[in-house]
Amino acid sequence: MAERPSNLDEAQQQRRMAKKEMIKPLLGNECEIHNYSLQKITVGILGTGDFARSLATRLVCSGYDVIVGSRYPKCNESLFPSAIEVTSQREATNRANIIFVAVHHEHYSTLNKLRDGLMGKILVDVSNNVEVNEREESNAERLASMFPESTVVKAFNLISAWALQSGARDGSKQVMICSNSQEARCMVVEIARNMGFIPLDFGLLSSAKEIENLPLRLFPSWKMPIILTVVLFVLFYVYSFIRKVIHPYVMKGQNVFYKIPISVVNVALPCVSFVMLSLVYLPGVLAALFQLRNGTKYKRFPCWLDQWLQQRKQLGLLSFLCAALHAVYSLCLPMRRSARYQLLNEASALSRLGFTALVVSTLHVLTFGWRKAFDSTQYKFYLPPTFAITLIVPCIVLPTKAFLFLPCVNRKLKRIRRGWETSHQAKFREPGEADSVAHFSMESTSRV
Image (cartoon, rainbow, N blue to C red; front, side, top):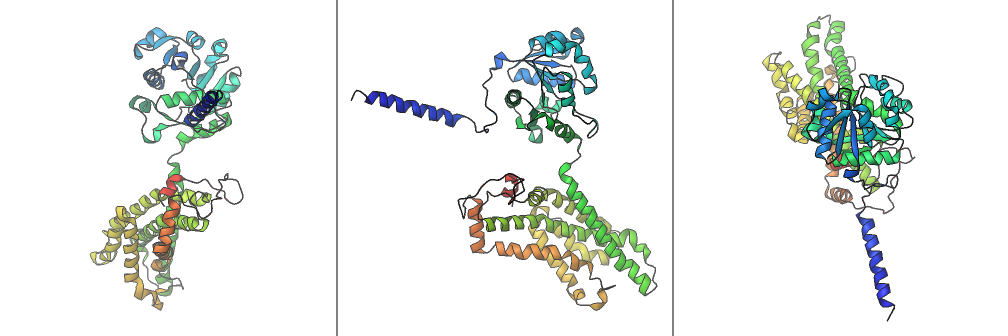
């Protein structure tokens, strides 16, 4: 009986330890969470520009002691709130633990006189370039080579001064961080989190060049949809040009080149819109078939399918743009001809009812083109009518969608998307492995 209290104490102690382990955030084994005290960290900022002023204000509001280093402290002191101390660059580097280098990368050489104060400190490089891949090495790598005694972290270059002032919203919440020092990364991660941003660990400093190129890429998610739209338009335009202009000229000697700027374009635009609208729903159908085959939602999609799923919004907007242009071009034609496309225009304009638009557009094309499909005179140069080509993708999407709507199939698909698995041996694999080479997007899965 005398040993019972000690056993109870030992059991309680084990429960407390287990509880502490459960409280720890699940951030992986590579980065340990350091509970740095805000009062022990003095953040220094070299520079007095717009970004430096916004950053200093945001850091003070987040509970940090901030000291700004300036070449002309008396002139720039009035630009900062009274809670921020503005002093010389040398004094700021000597007193700060973490230093934000908020100067242009062209002026890094002016920091050589501060080498003693920067020794052993963490330097956060926030600079950007003017052009993509402006130099062979990134600005952060250049700064690290200039100050090998310091630890350089690339971060906050995607955050604007406006975002620092008005607060993190939408895409401006993400702070991409990379450094060769794990401890330095964790410290900057903690600072970004305390400021209300979402830190993203990009690993070693070699990723800095990729991070610096991101702000210079114009609409990266629109690249492939725009290329696809242009390619489809060129193909349908050339195809319609051969059928409507070249064929009458060769076979009958008719000069109908006046159709090139309006009539031929107005044939290509609705075809592109129709095919693009079909491509919005085709990846969702393919993803559902993948999930049914795998019996789980936790297996990665192929890379091409994952990217396709993430670009459906862009495909839909470009489809609507082509439909709108088709409507404008139709106004240039006689009313008796533009009335033929009225149903397709109305169907494509139903952006909120995309699948309904696809069904109505398909029915519209079948209604007006059914007789022409069996008319031999429509096969000019043995080429089928344009509408027959546009029906290929919708005729794949709609029957497959109908199959997925079957109660037995739909019930199983819903169970899989709620987490049910056919086999409990699903494994997560890296993108480079054999059976799966893609990154699985949770956002894409939720919208399938």
